[in-house]
Length: 196
Image (cartoon, rainbow, N blue to C red; front, side):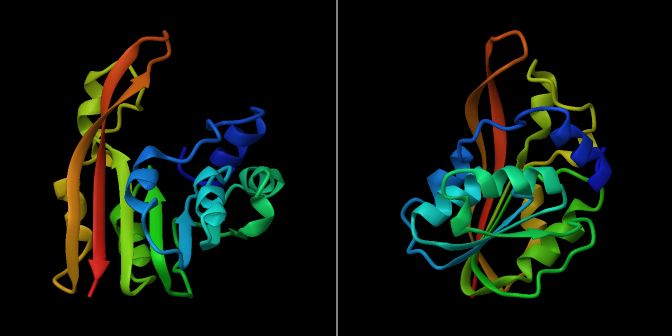
């Protein structure tokens, strides 16, 4: 469920897994930023990376599913992004970025991954981590019953040390549609931290 083969199966069994729209918390946190270099870790089919690139960012999209990366590259604007096939469970970025963004990377050892991603943020740069809140398990949206892989914004703050300024640590509500077509309020755990 958390390895490359599982995600490759998921992507190759459908024509599209995600909506093709950028994640709303990325839009909320990055729309007014001055473009620079960005890493979209766990980029999937590329909507976030392509959205950033369209706003002038020089973007690297990293994922371990080759089908998702191929689809991302084929999307309009996908040629503006550098796509990298990496194993996110072990990968340490070898560059520094003005923005490192990771959305919904729920997997074992996720905090070790977040720490490696934080290490890729340049001085003055931002780390944006967004995850599913544990309270979503009490809704009908269909989250896997894996409470240890979900978290709160407060729990995400342990990713950074005192060399960072935490700008946002917030559990944000938003409306989603459950499998039966009903509107449901869910929560995103959002961390925005700036490296001093």
